Length: 111
Length: 111
Image 1: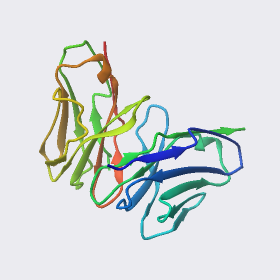
Image 2: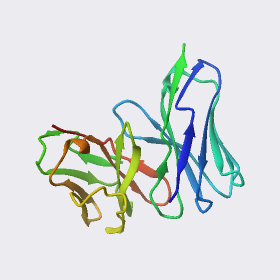
Image 3: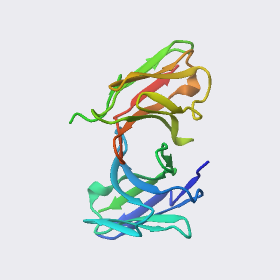
């Protein structure tokens, strides 16, 4: 089955700086890669996703890049703000299957 | 749209008792997923349904776990008998075309 590795487990950045979270996947058949943000006591919330036929996608301060050859994808958050503090999860999916998640990154924005 | 609805939000029970978790997916979504989240294992897919039919239950940990989807607007996850190691947050998610949307979760504590 699919295996998703996520790094780092904790990331602390100064407010206004950029944050980058990286994930690798094992199944070359995976074709959909979403990122979720989870705040304390809440369910994961989709923030951005990318399909395997696209190399990069951007939505305001958030961007995701995908390298199919290397089987890795990254989340980039620019101009970080206090409300960006949360746990972020990457995931991978093949076809209509359920998602396989990484272990999560605790992002801390230092004022 | 009310989003995915889960009940109860919190459940405390004693070992050996039956526990039933409930989920109402987003209207019009034809896929429903049950996940479990723990500190040790992260977010794990337990089972998912397409058009009310169970497709993949390979993530269900033991025969003590069972899930049903009697119609397009309701699903249950049952644990009988419950054990302390079942303590976790259980999420239901639904999907229409592509993105998967999560409910707020049920926090289960088995004493």
